[in-house]
Image (tube, rainbow, N blue to C red):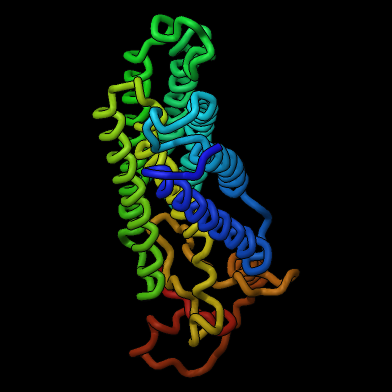
Length: 349
């Protein structure tokens, strides 16, 4: 093992920082689900949890790779460190590809819930399902392609005597470019769709700030994918694999880590309804979107066993009592007071 040096120093410390932030965001997300909303964990929570586990394993391998010469010229390293570092990076690359699927699937699941019911948002829903399917297919291509770059695969990290003849750098470059291109397309799709879904929603300034931060993180993650594609395209020389992979590995971790944080932000919006944040105790998000999907929630702080807004509305509709009176009626207010139901004025159609 060697001390991190060169590009490996940035990769080492930034990996630790991003991994810490992703864990903080996800644990906060679970805390909001459990203690503020008092709801069971949803499908997107489980998907994000699996993505975080794979991401944590990827980050751990990258940190170990930095201690075996990542970002350093091979001439300055021991051959054993070069072999071990290449092997660790190979496994980390496969795990990184695998972690992107549940992360994007979790974000898509959240956006599908925001999109509401068809027909108005049927195209959006199909787009999100397509993003998940395309991402999963791209990961399969990545894993199969990288696994067949060398025959045997141990030739990739130098255990075969004829490594130069047994490996196909062109295949590795083609598979990597394909996966990066798919990531660019899917990441930008997920970065821009929330803006369309939340366009007609009226929110307070603090919530707009939170939503804007979420969109900004998604856009930054998409830009990180573009930078990674750039590094992958220009770094065609595989003779110094461990030295040249540090920038691409760095932006890969940035992309996935920011994806986890951005995907967890919508679940953290109920924090804006806390008394010390929202002094007037009014719901941070005032209205529903065009499809009836409530953002934010006014019932995060209700005790267990009490009805939420939807449950109370159902009970009101079931227990409505119409009161008929013979009081004098003002002709000018006849339309306004046509019906009176327990203090709820109902306008006639």
